[in-house]
Length: 192
Image (cartoon, rainbow, N blue to C red):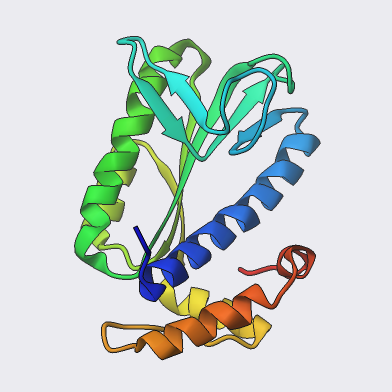
């Protein structure tokens, strides 16, 4: 099924934000002698997803897990479960908050003896109710507003703004501009 240009542009923003966070978390992990598990190949697990199983046997896919004594070939003790999320509009922000809590809370309960950190990196538009809900459950939140994201992409000479009236031609132009940058060029600039 073909993806609309608006969906693709939103996906580009979300994936780049995740890559930016991964870069910073990797530095943190190295500094504190932790292993950062993130999407991609890892000999200690099958597939490319970061999946953990709770005490009920349910599997939860996550964005990042920091592990003590973890290596590429050995799963360590979880010290942090961290999710990231990008939303352009607030209409689904509460659902995303519930999805995040539904993935992380059972894992924290399963590994409660290690008292893992619960973190969420949110970007774009989220309602105060969604943020308050996560905070009330003990999540630490790093939040970047939609305006901050638009300003950050301007460092690349790209107008990342869009709304319901943005045309397919405009989306395709943004996508083409972004794809013109090499991966190293994208990661060499700090987005936030």
